[in-house]
Image (cartoon, rainbow, N blue to C red; front, side, top):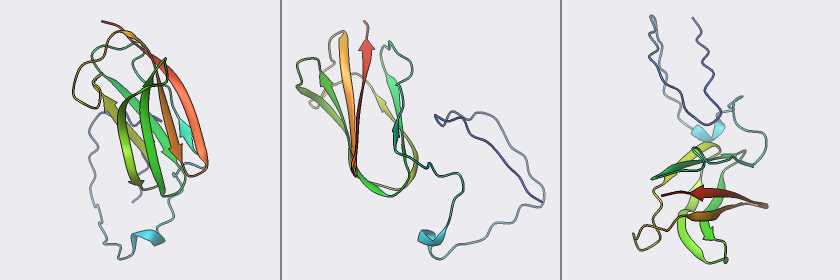
Length: 131
C-alpha cells in the first residue's frame, strides 16, 4: 500500500490522514536517504501574512545541509533580530517572527528586510509591520 501526500510549499498542511496496514521501518543511516521531495534550489519565500501584526512566518528551502543565517534588518541597515544562526538539514523550513528585537522589545511599525545566507546563497526580501 502506498500513500502520497503533497504538502503546501510553505508547510501549511492541515487535516487528518488515516492509514490501514502502515509499515514503519527504522533507517540506520539517515544520510543515505534520498528524498525525491527535497528542494532542488535554495529559496527564500515571501513572509506570510504581509503586512503583519503581531507575527509572521518566514519560509525557506535548502537543497542540502547548510549553515544558515536568517536575520531581520531595519531600513537603516541595523540588525534587529537574528532568527536562525545554525546548521540546518536540507528541506523546507519555517520560522515565526513575533516582531521583537534581539532584546525582546517589540519593534515599531515599518518596513523591514529579512536576509538569508546559506552556503553561497544570499537573498533579501522586505516585509511590513503594521500596528
